[in-house]
Length: 210
Length: 358
Image: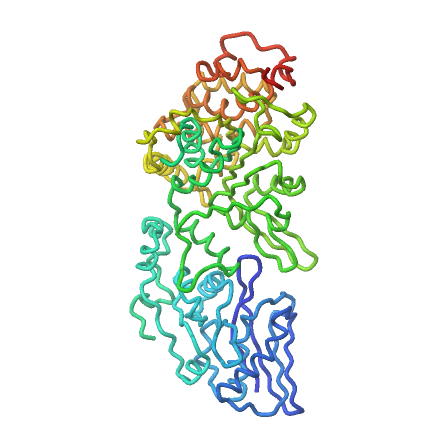
């Protein structure tokens, strides 16, 4: 079965939307990532397989191919591990694809399934907002950065925790405006840019039970 | 700012630089407060607008420098790289294409202490980013652009021993060494510096005073904020311009109205010194900042006089005789331009009396 999960790749200080496609086919066990992965991305498959095993998902013994599209952009960093893992779960029919479609995912996985911090979450969240997505799912460590883009975000700490909810509600991040004021950035600056009160995907930012 | 004794003129000049985002070069003997003053500059910088904070937070996010739970960078960055930095470390790039120190100081201050000690090629890579506010990195497989609108603050000694042209001390350097030292800061780089300052040693009375009469940072900061507010209002229809130093040439024409006397002064200075068009625009912007600080509607002659002095006066002070330094407090060089016949061309070069004091 073919699964698709959306993520983002950093180019400079901006991010572009990347599709993580996962295909499972009959054949000898095989796991490969294509789409110009560089450096840490090439090691991702090792971490993904371990993390999935250690969070209790028994993967069927099949031929797994992961494609990071578009294929001609360099993809760096370990942020694709969470979307790859989710794609594998969808392709193995542990999860439904439907709830994941409107969100962007990023995060590095440790071998026990915990989601670790990544770089570049703010541009990632801005790309999600501009691409019309409902929200992002990022490591808990970085969840505050996504607030800056006024994006609804869910901070995920452990892989097991968020995988078990097949309903997949991301927890709302509260009051980005309040948080920004407490950091000392003047609220006048926020209002004057015109995006302070802008609702993201038509929902009121503050009341988000998810 | 109360930690720094004396140096009131320097503090005023730094206030001017902070108000408009202009580049500063401080030249003076060791221990005259250059580094101390530069490090206290963040205490008088104006607060950031949301868009500025967003841009700088993006850069820090890409570098992975945000702390757990930190959503936004709230303070203007202050970067002070050591002078052994490489050119890739300064502008960015390297094997993984990361932003460099210039971009990390975006919308903030890049402080280069001991400017002649930086490698020549590193200083030269600064030229284009300082002018454009962006650094374009073209690599074999991708092109990346990082923003880097910085306020450059540089500090240097006038010569290797540090005491050339300093009243009360003798310089022990050979002439060729002094020329060599100055040559490390190239002409094009100096052209991009708006304010050149000479820091002089502080009198004992000021240093030893127990109850300081120094003005606190809040005094300067209020004036800087007020000037920035005027600039915000001026640039409300121009996206991406946050202070006078960032004005594009077309914007300069429309916003920098001068009084006739100021215009005449600028024209004289251009002819006398052979200033470039870039210098012309930068002087205009500096004068506009001074006018903002003093709440002048258009640029008055006193604003223009100060702007030209900031750019020209102390550079000449490095080379010419002591007399002109002593007169500095009484009469500015530009007013001399208007009243007296021009100095002879021979005085422009290296006068022998400037080399050693006795």
